[in-house]
Length: 126
Image (spheres, rainbow, N blue to C red):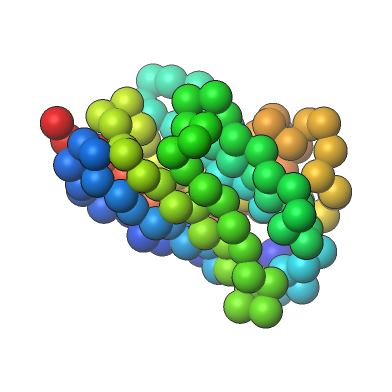
């Protein structure tokens, strides 16, 4: 089975940058579509970004577009989420997610993903 470990969260100030990491084990990383979601207390889980198996295609939620960048290194079995110009409203628990299925139309739905990291807290202060 796939195991994911996400890390890199912390407390930062508005306007700062932070990079999250998702490390995979148990399966070949290159067979997985990878995504990031986030969830703030009392709110729905929100799609952040996704990347295809080979890294050739990416997608972003409207709220993070042009500020966040998702990437992957299949040799290192790692995906990154580079976050810039962080805002207070970016505060949430961020989760790495993965699935065997290809990068298809349902990539924004958290129910479409089979494997999840434990979550890493990102807190942005003003």
